[in-house]
Amino acid sequence: MTGLLVDARDDPGERVLMLTGDIDLATAADVIAAWLWEASSSQADLVAVDLAQVLFIDAAGLGSLVALRQIAGTMRRSFVVRNPSAQALRIMRICGLDGLLEVWPNVT
Image (cartoon, rainbow, N blue to C red; front, side, top):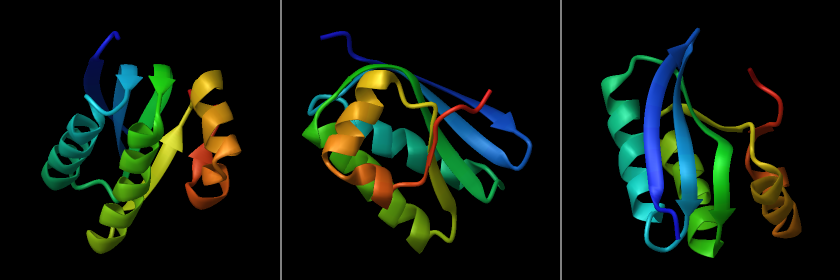
């Protein structure tokens, strides 16, 4: 288990949380808390998570992404998954979440 690091930056019109490590049962709530903090403190309409450096994601991690989609809607914000790692994208596709979540695969 590697844990999770969260960093944030502003891109034009959006706030991006860059996640590094594992999104699993131990860290899924941290992803939601970090997103809520950034969404609450930013004026951006779009608050994204960047998964390029996510090494592992399990069902709890996927659940956190679905929860963020729902929370974003109630906050009248847009939620996007950017740059999912190969492992994250594969598991999202297997579970059918690539059709539920808005996924931007190659954002620089």
